[in-house]
Length: 507
Image (cartoon, rainbow, N blue to C red; front, top):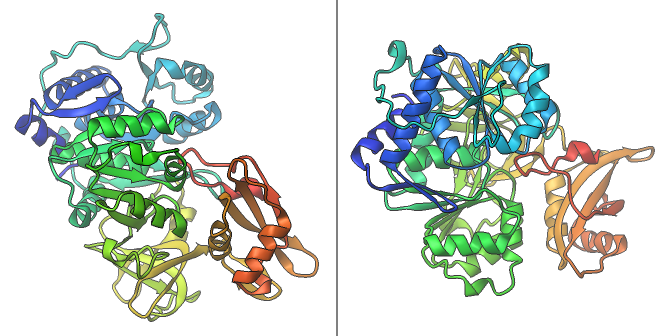
């Protein structure tokens, strides 16, 4: 099965059902399919061939869904890039992939016009919503009368490349994660096996669809015949919640920053979100206090705490009924995969241990685009199974029943006074303080300790906290060597385009 087959089936089966809602725009599956056909026809006319890379530099909206399925329909590889991406990174991705086409919005012209002159591959630029004619680019096709082209190009192999998704770059330069049709369909199957989205669902997507977490909600939602409501901006949480209530959304995927903004809305209970049946959290660890507040506010909804990474989409989830018992756990492995913890020598560890998480399954990436050394560091042959497995670089501990608890990135572990300190454990302690909105903990060089624990804290508006308050609170919660030696207060924490805290910038 190819990644686009599910949508192609749905557009034939449910032509009159609403597929996408974005602001005032409402598209049925038939209308969305016609737009896919029109863009596919343009790509074929420009001789875009199987395996060519097409960069999607688009605002969240219907054009993003159109672009994905049009690119796949001609056998090409889609490369999604966040609309928040700066021109320098856009140039890097275009050159790194040797892209043949750039699909973009007129609103982003100030960025792509700066990126294109530095491109070595001279991609064709197709622009949606361009207000003034520009001889350097082509207009996004508005004619939706193109005949659908249903034949898979050249009997395309499910093992062929479907997408290259660039990592967020929290610890260094971005790498292109290569995912085949088989990889992505396998991830889809596993996620759907436990979340069980329905055709009747309305997905409230306020995440960037260019990143894995948001992307799969577009793919799965349109693949099963649900309605995907795409929000272009989360700058005004009240407007977001109003839209969710108006559309009666049933699925809400979120990240810590988004949950924090929504929980901060005064009189949140005034908005009718009783239709919600599933809330999910991934991309970054959610503080325990946030989890409890979400459950109290939306008691009718099942809350899934999940863990994953671009290299394989999803790895684990915590069953909602286990939340009270293990609020800080991200659960156990999802269906159709194997996972275990390994020590520094690569040996498997029993439950109750701490080590690097290793994952095995059909959803694991092919590797990093044209980066053999980085690929070899992550994908290694497992001697017991003689299969390639993913070494995540993430350190976890397990309890006696095999439930996973995130400790930190291997590179993030702080070695202070001969002891290993998990930044996540210190962050959890700080988050338990009244008045803390966000925090991040890193290790900094120290002549006596080797590394000292340093905390960066964002206080809630109107709350007056001091460094002494934070340090004293941590000392009451944990061993002295784990407590921060210094605390810096900021208005905001630096973030990647996907919303993750970028600790590299703090260092």
